[in-house]
Length: 328
Image (cartoon, rainbow, N blue to C red; front, side, top):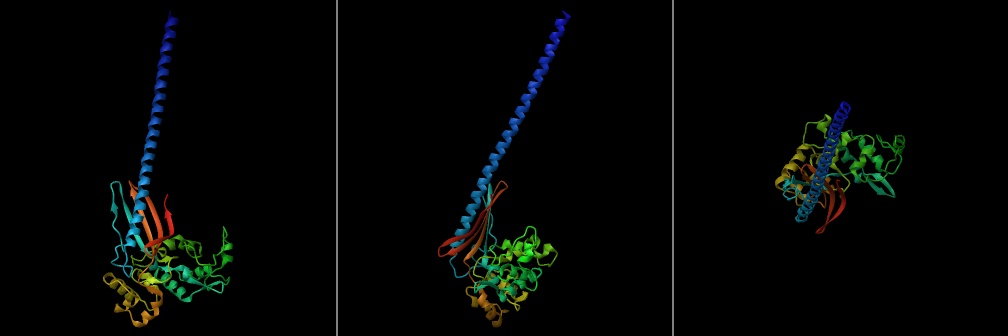
């Protein structure tokens, strides 16, 4: 009898443990299912936000094109609706941020060399301009020689330059392009230029006190015809135009154009500090309008960001896209 009772107690004890284990397993399964469901729900929400952000970015890009399409006056710069900071466009689940830059406000590094007799040779005036730009950005002007050697065809190093033999000694080895650069980012391959010098302004590198001066990357381009739009060029680019263009004159130009954009090149002489001699020197390399613009459109939906970067060329009433990149 006692044996029977003992077996019965063991049975109930085993049954209780079995039920507890079963309940524990069910709890673990339920927890895992809940976690997976939560993850799936979060992924679904993130996917929806990502798609929404992409739609916002593309809408911002189209809005930028519409602004440029509506600009039909005889100059490009202040008082144009696209010029300067554009306010964010709010939506129910996020907002759009758009910026439009004139690529002719920058120094075209592709024009540093010119094709002559099937060779790429340096343009001395452009070299001098780039040196002045580097000087204003507190960068070693000797780097300009390494850029020249990167682009020119010959194998004779400039005074402070290097040719392919230097790059072939690196790990991994590579060769100089020996023709104009394809992108400004390619300059990071050139001796003397690193990400710090390319992307950080002088103040962040421990030089200068003018906060308005940005990094080298903001002042270089590979688009356009090489002329500088004096309606849109920033201080360092204006200063690169001539050795006689000092900061006082450049700031006079920037201040004057705020209320009186230049409709033709000769209008530059209306700035009191701009002499006829200075105007005659720079008139062949300046302009007052542009046909090439960089559009950056960001769509933000619940902190998910999608970005479109594009360079477009205005042709009549339409545009030719010469560069387009959409973030994933």
